[in-house]
Amino acid sequence: MVEIAAYRLNLLRAGYLLLIIGLGLTVWPSILDPAKSWELTRGVVVAMLGALSLLALIGLRHPLRMLPLLFWEVTWKTIWLLRMALPLWAGHRLDAATTENAVECLMVILIVAVIPWDFVLQVYVKGSGDRSRRHASQ
Image (cartoon, rainbow, N blue to C red; front, side, top):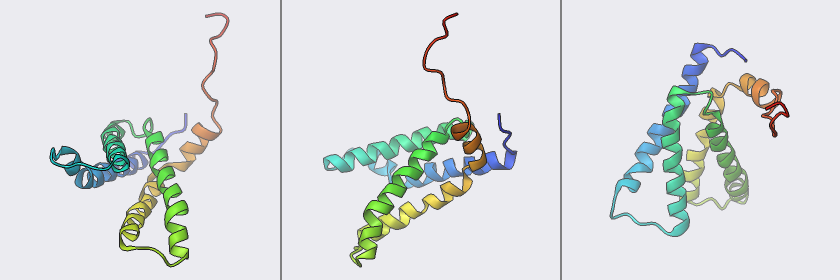
């Protein structure tokens, strides 16, 4: 197993904490407001972001085990920025709401910065995968 320095683990915990605080301030007030209602797709987004913030709590205790949660965060924001924001920006068609969302999504740079990429390379890319069958002796 690749050894991770304590300060790197704490930086990773700070990334989870950023998710918890950011989503706690923006998403959870809507979730907890019984008078709040959303159209279908917005409701799905709010529920998924709420789940992300709750799972990030586990990341405070188990930062390496919860890395796939950060991979998901980086991936969806990167896809949104490349597929939605970048073409609008290139065509000079960004409105205020899309610009605000793009700025929020660009904060993913902080998550990218705290991920221990050497660990990711060794464990997720170069490491052996989980077996797919039981051994005959079992």
